[in-house]
Amino acid sequence: MQNFVLHNPTTIIFGTDTVHQIGRETAPFGKKVLLVYGQGSIKNNNIHAQVTSALQQAGLDVVEHGGVRSNPLLSHVQAGIAKARLNRVEAIVAVGGGSVIDSAKAIAAGIPVDHNVWQFFRGKKSIRSALPLTCVLTLAASGSEMNGGMVITNELTRQKFGTGNRLLNPKVSILDPSLTFTVPADYTAYGAVDAIAHILEFYFTTRDRSTPVQDRFMEGLVINIMESCDKVLGNPYDYQGRADLMWAATLALNGWTAAGLGMVGFPMHMIEHSLSALYNIAHGAGLSIVIPSWMRYQARLNPEKFMQFAHRVFGLSGDSENCAMEGIAYLQRWFTSVKSPVSLAAAGIQAEDIPLIAENALPLAKLWRLKDYTKEIIMEILSGCR
Ligand code: NZQ
Ligand code: ZN
Image (cartoon, rainbow, N blue to C red; front, top):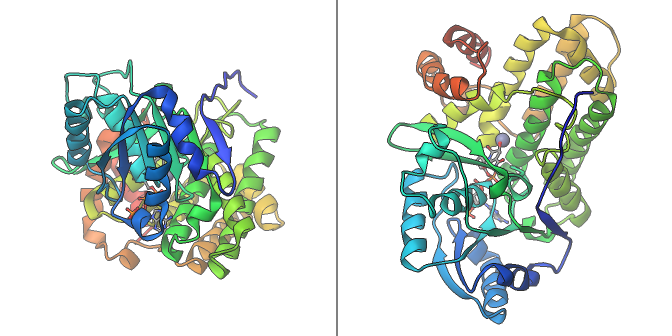
């Protein structure tokens, strides 16, 4: 186990009938708020009405900034920054999934500075202040509700970059699993894949060979995410299943799984972000395409951890590379069982695009200091996803 510092400033309010608290939890941060949300799901499932009435009852003045798209766009963030400045908002409320929360974070970070907010994503500027943010989570996936990360697509450069800062952690996040009852089957599955990816990125990239506490924690989360996802795909209104999936997805990327692992990487995300940037594929769908091939590539270099994964997550036995590969095949079969694509072809992406995708991924590989990932290696991994 390596040295670590763990600090997570986000207050989580978890459970049914909690949305009405968003008003009193936001009020301490200001009287005028920007309400950020997506394309309209929160209007169809009555969450918008619940949130706005709670904010108004707390005496808050609400300026709306809806229209956040999946794989959220820089231009929409910039419009949000301009609107927030014009209306002199003092706090931001995000109601949605990771795309909405990330957009709200980028707006919060962009308001105080006089440069393009994209500079943060290029690593050219550091985040030194941000407007306070509260959030109501409506989809279990990204973990953005309890971390300082944000991912935005620059549609002009066709780049999807992620960056983060503890200042961007939501002050308070309300997690009511019943709000996810209306999440369609595809995004329920994509969210589960995303959460599993967050865990596997750290599980397989730590260089420390002795992290038993973290390993069991992460292996258990992966098992819980698969089991609860299967449950809610069978019955979208299964509260316990939705609650388990929501909390496991939050735990997957709130800093707790990474504690003690030392240096870790995010290579699967580095490659996936190019699929989302170039083809606007759902983030989790892009990950289920990339994960098995990346795992096979990595298992050839470091079979032991993949054998452990096969033993503990899928109950396989054997101490050879075959066992490691079998565990990867089990995971890939689970992705297929929840109808998340496992090939570029299934997503309508041509194999001749592989050099273009690899070229697009290189700047993020550099930014994220993934120096082993040359264009050739990224192409090799993508060739395994045809
Ligand atoms: O836009 P609306 O109408 O709200 O519809 C959304 C969207 O179409 C819909 N939805 C959300 N909640 C719903 C619902 N539909 C019915 N009922 C509900 N309760 O679901 C669709 C997908 O929403 P989105 O926010 O895009 O999904 P997700 O939560 O998976 O977020 C994906 C984004 O998170 C980023 C990804 O890159 C991607 O842009 N990530 C953020 C991270 C972070 N901040 O730490 C890390 C992750 O790796 C990830 O990269
Ligand atoms: Zn992700």
